Length: 452
Image 1 (cartoon, helix red, strand yellow):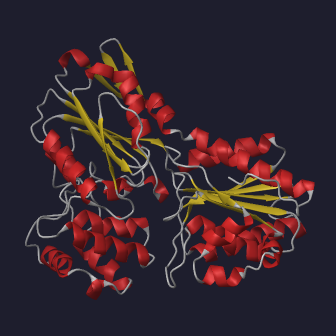
Image 2 (spheres, rainbow, N blue to C red; image 1 turned 180 degrees about the horizontal axis):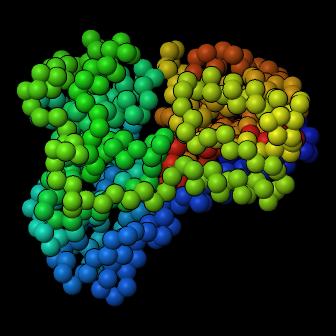
Image 3 (spheres, one colour; image 1 turned 90 degrees about the vertical axis):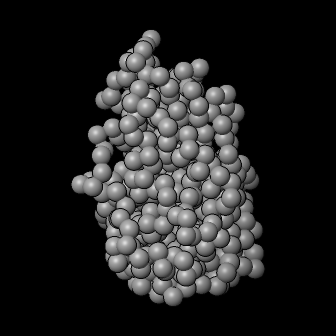
């Protein structure tokens, strides 16, 4: 977070920036992974309540806890507090630096967004742990954003290095998370419902923190415990649409081609597999964060307008639309008069062209700054709720109607930084990066625009 007062700014704008930070923190607190588990998992003597399910622990032999994602360590801490010694075995995979102290559940830290050997080791061990479970066992799966990259287990014909190349191509081409995970599921030995089938005949409950627009269960962490709706045909359509089919590793091309020829089964579908033993529960999502942020803004005297929790699209275009709404509110009082707090969530994409360092939230803030320059008084905060924006140590950035002017005084060229996807050094020099560290949750992005 910015640590110093911005001397160039007037008191009202400085206060708006502080308000934006407090509103963001309120949204973050509402989707705490630890608290979310506590709201959905409780134990009374020998009864375990998970959402609408009740398990009599006297008839449960083993409880095995596995999971993957950026927020999974905090989820696991909550599970340990509730179940304690009743946990027979456990293993989670988290992003490097996102681990927390655990007593009964082991942790493997691994690569994200590009999968690595540690992630594959964790996925293989998880699959081995549940393959010999019985009807009297309970498998508890903890999933949050990042779970797909942190639980990589490609089919035998595809190497980890080839999967890494595929991940690079999919992330860099501007594909949505729905599209990326559709392809991931079809080259995986654990995703797309395959983990759920491996757990049979034991009961399986998955607690999920959603980082996906629309909370689609088969997309979050590539849906290891739910029926898959995507197909090999859609995988081919996606790679063709982004012109990356010829760039795919030969083994991936061949695997998709063989799938199209039905040389092996599709991923498990609703009609093709047994799902009676499975329950999936979303315990936190983006809308909850937005709603809490809205309530905080109201207490601070702002009118609230929630634009959407499902914003997707190219980052700079989305930023321009948000900027236009803010400018309209500032000049005409539409769609609502100031003091106004505009809120939105979701996950935009950056089609990488010319190198640079930054993430979608920093790029959003920079593009919005260019759009609102000179229109008093507007503040824009855009941040990832996981505390990490792209490959940087920042969660996002904060900008206002003076950002462009201040950057030019500092010798920066905002258009050049935007065109080169180089927002991180831009905001670093202005001391306007949001540095929060790992937040132990992950419900996509939260954007806050204040207008007075």
